[in-house]
Image 1 (cartoon, helix red, strand yellow):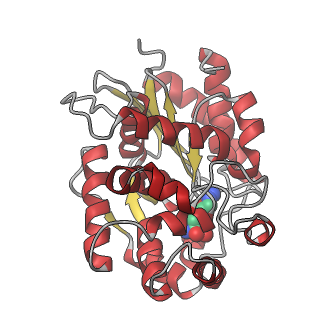
Image 2 (cartoon, protein in one colour; image 1 turned 135 degrees about the vertical axis):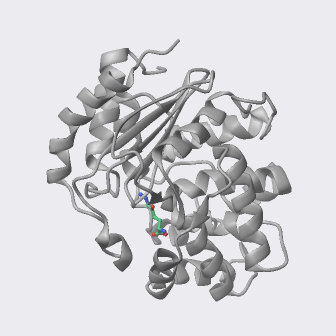
Length: 309
Ligand code: DON
C-alpha cells in the first residue's frame, strides 16, 4: 500500500533540508567537492511500479559505497558464497569505512565485511571478466537491469579524481595481496573500483534498485528474478549491520530500514516487501553519511511507522 505521496514527501524534504547546513561535502575525492551541499532529494519506488518523489530528483550523483552492495550481489551470483566469504567476513567493525586497523589485528587477516573499503576491494577483485572494461561492463549491465535504465554509466571525471588520490585504498590492496586475499595488479583493481564507485544515477533509479532488493530480487515490472532471494537477503542483512558504517546501530534503532550510504550523499533503502527508497543529500556528517538524508529517513520512518523491528 502506498503510504507516501510526492506532496507529503516534499513537506518532509522541506523540513529536513535545514540539516544540510550542519554537514560538509566529501573533499578527500577532489571532484566530489563540486557537489551542491544544499541539495536534497528522495524517491520511493513501489512494487506496482509507481514512484513518489520530491526535491532535486533529476540530479545525478555517484553511488560510491552504495556500489558495494551491487557488486556483492553480482559476485555472489557469479562465484557463490563459499568464494566470497573465504575472503571477507560477516561482522561489523565499529570503525570508519576506510580503516586499515582491523586488517592487522583480525586473524586471519581478511576484511571483516564487504561494506568497508577493504572488504569491498576484495569482492570487486572477484568480478568476472578478462579486462577492467569487460568487468565494468558486466557490472553496468547488471545495474542497468536493476534500475531499468539503459543510460546508466559512470562519471569519468569523478572516477579519475578518485583514482589519482586513492593511496589509502591502494595501501589496503597491498595489505590484502600480502595476505593472499587478492592476487591481481593493484592499479588495475583500483581502476575498476574507482569506476564502480563513480557509477552515476538519480534517486528514482536508486529507489528502483532498492525495490528489487525489497522484493527479494524480483523485478517489479516483469516479475523476473534478477537475483536469487538468498543473495537479496544477504545484501539486506549487511545493509542493516554495516550499511551506515559505525552509525549502523543507531540508524537501525532510529530508522529501522536496511540502508546503504555513499560519500556522494546517496542512501539506498530497501524495506522488505514494501518499497525501495533513494535519497541524495551531498552534505555529510563526520562518519560519511548524508546528514539531511538520514534525518529525512528518520522523519519518514516516524511519520509512517516504517521500522521493520
Ligand atoms: O573508496 C572510497 O573511499 C569511496 N569511493 C567510497 C567510500 C564511501 O562511499 C563511504 N561511504 N559512506
